[in-house]
Image (tube, rainbow, N blue to C red; front, side, top):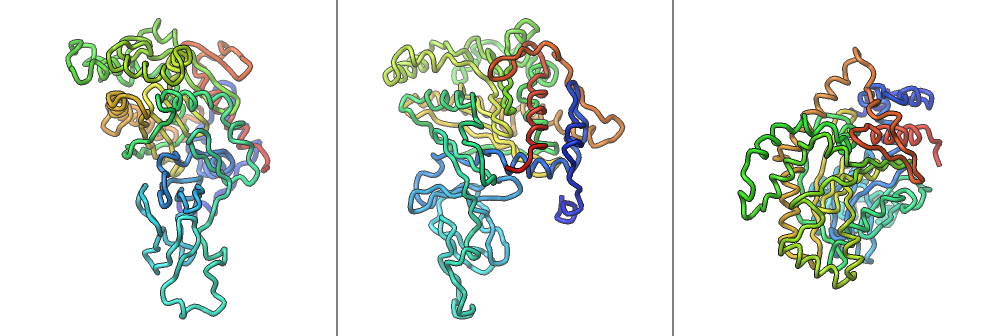
Length: 446
């Protein structure tokens, strides 16, 4: 959407938004209407806590990460005073983008257009040919600094930011989902995790919500991923010493039968967070692996936590933990995905991997294999999913079928203190996400 399009969009009213979501279905406008998308940017991606970086990417002064916060491209930096800053990636002189690198280290950020130079805290360091500016031109004038976004919070190394001037505490928004962040960090024998230097990214032509829905849709894998399930079933066991059947078993998991899917529990929280439990329970994917690498790892973890606590940490079996609106964490294989809306019909998926400090190197290698098998642009699994998301978007852009059905499992959800729980193949996670979506879009400004 260009600036002209955005300017002519009429914002939907609260009544309009409520009319888009019914107990068993959602109107296509939720995915295809630019006006609805703009309201999402204002009420969800500007008001909620959004993940922007991990502290391990910002170890020293000058370290930075380039990412997005609502419509703004931002630089997350570490300045000389040790502070984490979120700065708009825009020169206040003529509006040029300052930095094109995704991450790195820079003591100064120089605008490529007229060479205004900024420090990592966003302050203006110098301008060339200073005497050509008026006498009252002040390097310290806030209007000459990079725009700062002040609301930043960190939970166990995960950095979140919001444009909301009066946000609720980060831990309140996270709620029960602090458990999965705790679990990921607690799995490290040294008590710290570190993000790998490299990551994957993939853009698809579809609305951001499609990916978040798909992550907890346990009914689709047997159909969508059949092209990889069948070859995996035919492959001989123990075919690769390096892989130890990890890839084969991951691919085969998408071909679970009815009884196996029935054992998976779906969970949804009022804030829109959802996750599934009891997914990887067999063989090399099980939490109870006993091979030499895992034995060394367990011993190192127990040395720090004690046997009982180590068993509890490794016993948490939760998959595709969605922290609303756009963060997905898998603690067991130290994976994270961030889905960034670029437009009503364009989304960017970035996939990251963490290293558990103090764990055997082989553990990190297994995490990388998990990432490349299931979450990289070359993955048979992710490419299948993206194909389906784009087909959905193509269909939703037509006005000849206005509703999307989410009735599967309706009536079978079980209410619990923190939210809702459901069993086999229910679309409860989507219903939970959309109820939160309505609440956020119809809420008055704080």
